[in-house]
Image (cartoon, rainbow over all chains, first blue to last red):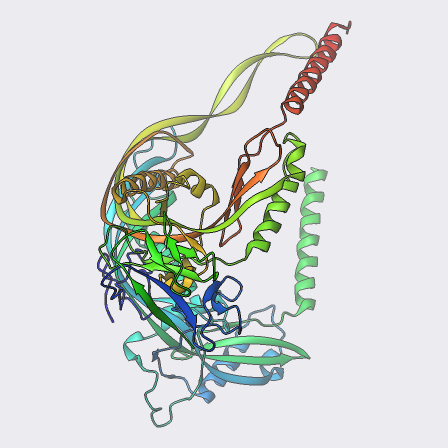
Length: 319
Length: 317
């Protein structure tokens, strides 16, 4: 794997330009022509001259219809290179779900934990990118530091930031918000190659494929890095309150690995209705999802609140 | 499946022998030529470092001439009422799919800027007014004012995807009018992509194109800076951009160039269509009697409104 001359980001096979800075990748084979000459491209099947067909997006012979392959922009769907093993087994995941259902609060049905029927419990290794990069970040923002008549004053600055193991979700199976809840609790130091055999008692799982093409993925990764930069520079902004935070990043040395992260996806049914919950694959205490509400309790609370409001309004009017 | 055959080699020049039937072909300003006798698409391969740059990358055509004609018909049909009505019955005199030579520029841009940042604040002010009985009274209202503060700072970033025409035949402004191209679909240049199409030679100096690209890069930085500024508003934005690590790659981009004749006594209208995205641009002639009529109608309407207001104001209350 070679690196970009300009920003030293790793280039992958088929890259025509660097994904970060657009610097052209070196061509593998350049023309070996020694002198100028006229050429005709000929069909390998019938020998007739061929021309590029916009419809076929390839050179096509007008006589026999054969098309010839040319170098295409390589934009493959990718697969994980790394995975994080499960540290929560099936029993622990089910117990975590029961415990979570029992802590659903006053609005949840009283019998939720005992009456919920577990329909499926699937170990899923969901797809994500693991990004490392360095960046010069310039920022501009308003803050209350130095404010005069207005509550805000403009500020600007510059900082160098390192991004180490930034996890960017690439999952279709889990929603982005669900991934964001799981990410902070992964112990990435335990990562192994995706081909490593399962250890004794280790949970095997479905490894999710990356649904996004490489080209789209890179843009998504860069947007994510920019959003992370915005959060990281906030402590640099003087004052206690700030707004209108804008950042401009010059990324360098970016590497992107594809990783599969463990989670238990649980589907359960309560009185005929389906619900879904997620248990973290390494930390069983991290559980979230949807659960039913007891509408009788909700209605009672609304009625009591309305009654109280009416009493207060009446008291005010009678004063 | 298919192969490339080298039939004739000659010293650098503009005349070659057709690689298929042996007829003599002149390559004037183009890299490709179709033989008038056997209709074979010929192209010129030159050694790297010759007097003509070899295209490094190419964006391929995505539609044929019929697609371009449909785009043109739709475009001509959707012109404004002020356009010359004959444009809708115009005939296409010349339709050519051309790979236009251009340079693809990118660089690292470091920018120092200064600006005056407007921060809004509200304050109360008192004013005098007259009540229903005609008595004067003082009231208070809240007004929003702007405090301007100076800001100086830096902005960094990569400027990418700047395309500048390297063709004397198609001015950069014309190419810009049909940009952008989807550069995710870039291919490495191979004669197979241009075979059978007109591929123009590079006819503008690379240094000229580099200077033009820098200008576009600085303009692009200006656009980014306007979005980068904090505050509720800003003014007096000035910036100085230093570019480094520039790259300038010769590329070919697909363009349909059409000559549309709408009147026999006028020169044809030139229309340019992006050969990849179908974006279309051309300067449609206006019908001056329609423009004059529009101005007269607008003036009459304004006069009528003013007259009505004046009449209303003159009536006793």
